Length: 350
Image 1 (cartoon, one colour):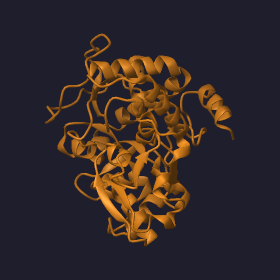
Image 2: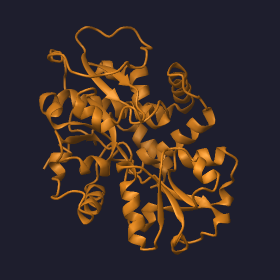
Image 3: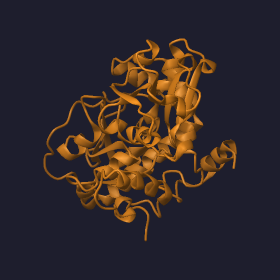
Image 4: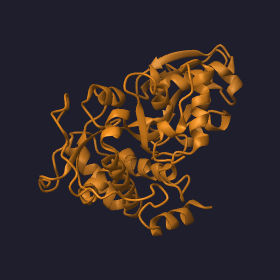
């Protein structure tokens, strides 16, 4: 099925019956009980103050305000959360606010996390559950300059490859280890400067973000060599919506309502591209971030491919994707025991 036909079907379908069995009525639901610890200032409200009977959910961005989270922004802008009985506070992300740590510290209720990272941490601390799988396509690339002489993976022998530090780059390091090429892994942050300055021969990037930043720096695509990890058995999908098992157990209806409204936000974002870009840029300016429409348009278009990879099951966590990520973690002993798919993704009925 083409992505164009898939989008047409997605936009014409009733509101997400393929994701959840039913919408849950929230009238009369109790307010959040007690004062929860932690928290930071959310993005300034762009709408009227919420009604007093709305249930508050604090959503932590995985990264900075950008089109990667356009569905959340548009759900907020168009009132989709409020219609589900929710008052959603969008909290800033970035290096200072690790998403998983925000959940276990209690400074956020819901956040976005990579699938493999979420499985890795399922048995540690309170554990997390997947509310909706936003991205259903691998986004991780290795990219380098053709002037480095790299044409195939075998040419990485002895080369310097920049990989994100700690868990964000863990499965990339496993991928490189499998090549058995005596590759020198260089821990890096999120900047592309080491590649631009030839301090590394290749680096890992997300195709919706850092790859485009390399192009924006002046390199043409025909000057680059890329390896998509998905083409080599590491087809690991990215962002999903997550909360802790405890929060889900206490508030299952509100969690499902948040996921439904977010998917409705993605539906709207993909149907109203220019309006969505206007909103993303406005949010970036409010947050005092550089706002580049070209870059955000690239990101939104790439996210469209991820959201619509399985256009008739938007928001669904495919068991095959789950098992693929888990198999890597088990192979490298990052987890000691398997995670049950239905416990991890409670929306999928047995």
